[in-house]
Image: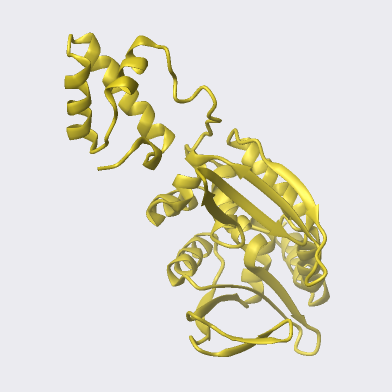
Length: 286
């Protein structure tokens, strides 16, 4: 049997409303607790039901509610979460946090959080052992439980707003590689979850961006991290965008919120003449 602490705010809200409906029908408080336990598989005390129905207690007086209806902001958050952002719970504090080296990425994540009604905190962290990083965090049980919930719910948001989702994900995981000798540009992103990269491939295809997925590092492969040797605990996969037209379409239709990555991609495309050729074709068609 679950307790109220195990539930999301939206679930608790539905149970509260149901309790009031049952009370208005003339049901006793003891009977209401039994009905709620049977209907919602949750254990609620008679005293809590009494306070709800009398209006002397509202669970949400101190709870910051957020809007989890699909939106561009929520899609960006989901993309960043499936990349660099993390969630944690300690002493019933539900935290979502992003630590990154790029200030503009932190600002974009913060704006998205504000866009759904959250109240994020931001700061800068100096670290001798690794690069200094910007951080953004928010404490919100409702958003925490949504992100930790079924992946398919997150994927549904991504499919409704593919550009924003992909931008959040590639801001987190994306890299741009330009080879002057071969005059080639590549955009790639790595992740341990093959389902996430498969979703990215599907969404990229819908934006006329060709990509492929391959096994980048097999489980057990040794890796040197800051002078210490480790082994990959899971298979690591990578998604790659290589065709010139696809790279150009990514720049125009998705892009990075991180200025240094977007500028690197733009400079690379200009260096190999993609933008110039497209401009000439446009002029000819006119």
